[in-house]
Each structure stands twice: as structure tokens, then as C-alpha cells.
Amino acid sequence: MEKRVVFKHKFLPYLLVAPQIIITLVFFIWPASQAVLNSIFQEDPFGLSRQFIWFDNFKDILGETAYINSLTVTAIFSFSVTFLAMASALFLAVQADRAIHGSMVLKTLLVWPYAVAPAVAGVLWFFMFSPITGIIAFVLRFFGYEWNHLVNGGEAMVLVVIAAAWKQISYNFLFFLAGLQAIPKSLIEASAIDGAGPAKRFWTIVFPLLSPTTFFLIVVNVVYAFFDTFGVIHMITQGGPAGATQILVYKVFYDGFIGLDLGGSAAQSVILMLIVITITVVQFRYIEKKVHY
Image: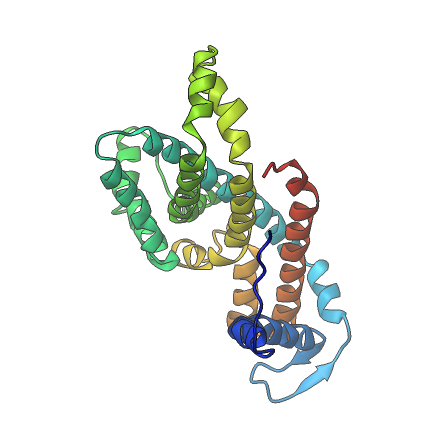
């Protein structure tokens, strides 16, 4: 017989969900509505006057070469960060799940980077790859490669992708490890008895059973790459050189707070919000079909 939870007080369910509703209203609905409102106005830098201009901000943005370049940079950056962070985390989770001795120490060390703020992670990687004092740049120079991400756009992109992915690996690692430990060992042992090698066991049994975890992490990592990597970009390259690492969220900040184009910055934030919502809906609409729960 199925047991159902019944609330004796009719206002209790609303009281329980009230904190989440308030947080959503204060930190998402209200800022999003303000961005939509500001995107159809042209304001002076001091916010003393505004002019209603309909969709001119959006027309100017979509006709701007720098903004189209930022779209391309964001697509490359987001895909690279998501793939690198998830692939690395999955590999580490598999190794940690197999470890017999010192597994707790290994897991603890792998989780630590998640406690580092994105801005701090950016500073760490900036100093390690600094063309003048960086230890990694020194090693590369020793082998004959002159690293300088301050003037080389490709190197700058590689650096911010590595830094952003490194920050997210620990989060992915926790979920992949939990997913691996939830897989019945009897399935692995049965396939091994049937003659399946380690690689075949992983791709035919383990990885398909991890599909719910993988789908969840894809959604989370894409959102992370679009929004939470601002600190990494700001501390390492500030969108440079020549816009090579200027992702959409950083361009919103730069145009709004540095360029003082408040209406244009708001319009960019609206477009960014629509892009992320569309990507998330597409993921749930098409990718989730391939997930086996």
C-alpha cells in the first residue's frame, strides 16, 4: 500500500517552499525583469536620464563584430571546459573507485580544489603561466617554447580553459564517484566472468549506468562555463588579448561597468539568459531521451 504524506495544516506546504520561492524571486526573477526593462532604454552613464528606444540596443549588439566574436569564443570555451572537466573527473573517479590503499586520502585531495574561489583559481594559474615568473612558463621555455598568453590569443584560451576546468573537476568527481559506487559490483563481476575486458566493461556497462549522472553534470557544467567562469577570465586575461577570451558574461561586465553602456549591457545579459535557457531546454528535450534511469 502506497503511503502518502498529508499536511494537517493547509498553509504548511506553502510555508515550506516559501524560502526557495523568495530566493528565486529576489536573485533571479527581479534581476532578470530589471535587465529586460533596461534593455529597451538608453541611459546616461550616471543613470540620471533614460530614453525609450525599443529594440535598438539588440540591433546594435547583433550587428557588432565584437559581439559575434564573443559568441564564437563562448561556444569554444564552454564546450572545451565542459568536456575537459568532465572527462578528467570521470577518469579520476574511475581510478579512485579502483584504489584499495589510500583511497580516502586520494579522494580528499581531489575534492580540495572545489573550495577554491574562481578568482583565486585564476590568480594561481596566472602566476604559474606568467611569462616572466611562472614555473610552467619557465619549464616550457627550457624546452624551447616561448609561452606568452598576454599576446597570443590561442595560448590565452588554452590557459583559461585549463584553469576553469581545473576548478570544476572536483565537483564532477564527487558525482561520478558516487555514481560508480552505486553500480552493483555483481554486474561488473558477471561481465568479467563472461570474458569482457576492462575497456569493454566500462563502455558497455559502467558508462551507460552513469548516464543520469553524466546528463546532470552536462547541464551543470554548461551553466558553469557560461556564468561562473567570470572570475577566472577576469583574473587571468580580462578578455584579452584582442578579445580572444572575451566570453559573453565578461563582455556584459566590460560594456556595462567599463564602457558604461548600461542599456547595451542589459540587452547582452538578456540574450545570454535566453541562450542558456535554450541550451538547457534542448538538453532536457533531446539529450535526456538517451538517459537510462
